[in-house]
Every structure is written in structure tokens, then in C-alpha cells.
Image (cartoon, rainbow, N blue to C red; front, side, top):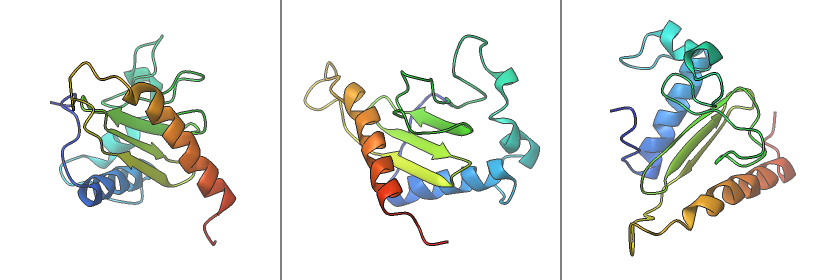
Length: 134
């Protein structure tokens, strides 16, 4: 199911994120996903008018996003029950993957909620301070 969460190692999850990013931009193929469908996931017509969700993905919610404050549109992400997240900034060609186990020591653990956006903002601060060579 599309809402089942993320299962995999950092390398495989990051590879999947990069494949989606390339497919959404139109410069890559995603096995099993039609190119037109991949490029349409960010179309707001697929989502709820008052929400941030689109076709199988979330998009940044200004001021309240699990992605933090620095992902720009067009961006897309997905959360997992165990606190994981995957976020892709299409315009800036950046993928971020967070793998966690928030159910340890208990399913009631919700410390990941404020942690995720802070971590994403910190990662952006580091990327902005050390830009990739052109």
C-alpha cells in the first residue's frame, strides 16, 4: 500500500528517492511507473484542496511541514510509521532520507515529530553553507 511506509537501507531508499526525483523532472525512468504519471505527482489537482497531499506524496505545508521550513515547491515527501521520512526538492535536486525506529522503546514515543523538521532545516543549513560545485 502507498501508505505502508519506507522499508530499506539508506542506500536503497536514497536510490529510490533519486529515481523518483529524476522521473518527476522528466530526465529518468522509474521502473513500473509511467513517465506521465511520475511527472504528474506534483500536480495539486490530485490532492485535497485544503491539504498538502498529492498523488501518493506529501508536499511542504508552509509553517507546519514535517520537511522543515526550507524545502521549496516543487518538493515531495513521504513519512513512515516508525518515524522515517523521505523528502525530495525537485528544483534544487536534493534528496533527504531519515531512517529511525521511533517505536523503541514504545509505540507511544513521539519525539520524532519535532526532530524531523529540525533535522531537515539543519541539513539545509549545511548544504547552503557548503554548496556543491557547479
